[in-house]
Image (cartoon, rainbow, N blue to C red):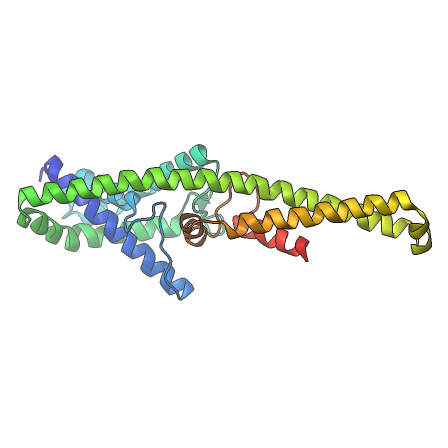
Length: 268
């Protein structure tokens, strides 16, 4: 069966939305609360749209051959997930998902467990869901369909721009937080070493040392205030990304949440 460009674009948006719904349900079951999953802010996950459209183009003609459908879907979706994860990390210097804790994973981008799940999901999609989607797309009047596609296209394009700008801001704040963390640790080490090396009576007589300690304490208070301003000024998009990708690592070996917790401990 040959699909038109109009149908394929419509399929992309439909499956992007259904993929987002799947991610939200999966995250909700695991966390017990609503989490707006996905790279973008809107109710769509483009990787699902690309994945299903790719499977439909390559595998749908042999949908009646179950082994070919399953293994072909596994190979295609796994390759797409690997390529997407690799490209996102190269562009943003960060991992948006990490399967390193799963068995039989490759660089954390893909793992056997989810590859098999994608294969089973594609069987359900191609055999059961997609015939209904075809009927729905054919049922919608062409003009209305074009309007819907145009609206979604503009929405996703705007969303991409806003999200990328927000990520750039996160990366800038992360670098600043990291520098604050390092300086606070240096101050703490300086103070601890001096207290260990000198008894209180010597400290009281040494005016120069007392002045240094006072300067360090003042600098520490400035750093605490700077940290407070950064963490309290996080925008809605930044908070959503943090919740959607709690293991996200940006220009550091530590996750965003781990870095924040470290700063909090230093504050105390």
